[in-house]
Image (cartoon, rainbow, N blue to C red; front, side, top):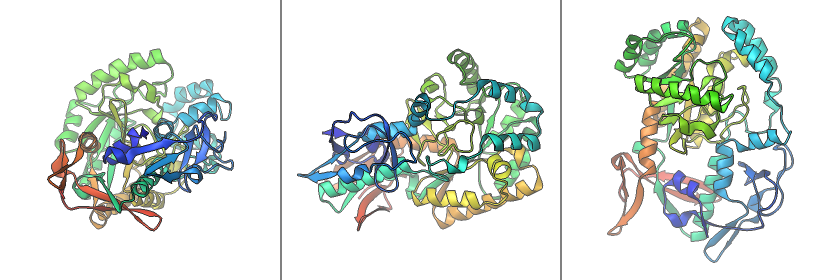
Length: 454
């Protein structure tokens, strides 16, 4: 019997709910396959076949699920598949096999050499050309991919069936029984953007939404302790944004280690808990050298970013000691200047998909790109929409550090039975709620109790 640790971390439920038997030989090459209609997986599958390309006809591993004698057998290792998606292993393996475009170091070096001197009007044309064909990419699924979350949902449904119970209790995802979460972040790219931050905080405060500001330590501008202190004193958060935003932080191990040491010094000076890399360039295998509690550099779907990929989840997850708070919505620059869309329609579509899965909507809106009146008006509409959602759908509007603290507390909580009653034990338990997963026909549904004890 194999226990899925990632399933337990996701649901915080009883260990027997996460027991799944492997079937098949598991020796097929790593590749893409399906698990039901909503999840594209990557890895080894014990039966059927895997495909080199996500847009091929994919084998559906749900067809070989076996429920018998109180056990459930599936044709893949859930932990391995989830790790492959969250850590974007499908990208590195696909590229190493020659099935994807190789990035040009010379082109990248030339672009970043002149980028500081290029106005947005020029940059956006170059970026549109480099992203040509993004809309036809089959995986991850635009505008939101919930493959990881769908795998967990389907495994929970199977667990209900194998145990022949009406419902399974677990610790709800968000504090006080909130139905989802939304966070706002701001990467500051230039002195002009830094100068606009006071006005931006006024705008955010007018809608009751606090946010985090990611500050570049070296090269672009100099953020004074006075400006950072104003952010903190007003209830906003200060984090670190790359080192000098030249696109090379992860270009070599030697350079990364050199800069990581400097970044860590700045993090201590800023009292920053979080980090985001420039342009979302990333190598999650190196995160252990960063002294941060959480990171915000992995997109849910990376089609509109220079580095392809996406973690395929709308939930936070741990990468070693660091909590990853993925960027789950389109960035303002991509919306305004790549898609040429100055409405909040795409954001609303993404929010709908995220909140239907009780997930986390995380935004990155740059102070530099919303100074212009039309962009600022669009951002104001987004703030108003989020404020309304918070009350209408019971959404938690929080700072990234609050999500980090909550998710870390929840990871240590346990659901226990005492004298015939279920209750939650662990740090932060007073904010936690017991929830139940049940089946309505073939559909999994959740109900959340009003207390942390039943």
